[in-house]
Image (cartoon, rainbow, N blue to C red):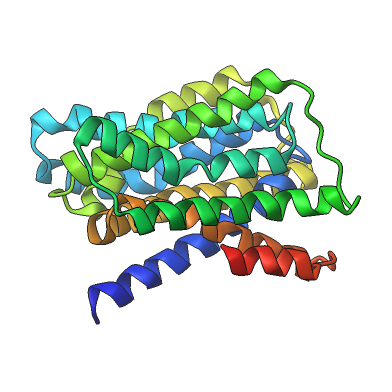
Length: 283
């Protein structure tokens, strides 16, 4: 198989995983707080990666381990909490728009700190896709199907900070960690989060939850699945895509997520208008 085919396959898999993760997060809010969901998600991912990391750790030079750990913090832990906290005060629609700033942050940080050069047609495509995402979110507002609250505007800075961290991490992986096997890099970096995520779960009174309650059980299982697929497996796939096709292409996964999100909406019998389909075509 060609690298181009593998890249698109990884791209589609990531869109499916991360596009479905929003539904799992939404379902889990029935019993868990945003911070508990973020902590449990990272803990589950770290727990799954830990056995593999034990064997992969020796394959990474000791002097590069701090950078690998930093990748986990800025690429997984901090963004998860920034989005979790922000989405308790702002609309998910606004969060989705801000999340789509990730490719733009990747480009800007690459240009400013790594001297990257981006072709003009790629920049135009990037902005056209972002315009499509914004319109996709705002079309239901224009038609009166949805109301977006702009209260707590200061919380909008949290997702913006998260996308900046994503941009830093993607560039760090593509420029400074690109020679490390993506499986080794992903499993070791995520496994580093086992201790901080455990402490956060304890601090957030997660262990005082009634685990015999069916609703709580479903939320915990859903969040754990989110951690395994949406963080552990997806991180391996994402780092592989970054090394294979570059940071910009990999970050465009945020443009594919709405397709999957709308599909879940269709299964839940939500109305999908021609305007929304037009926005998807624009993307």
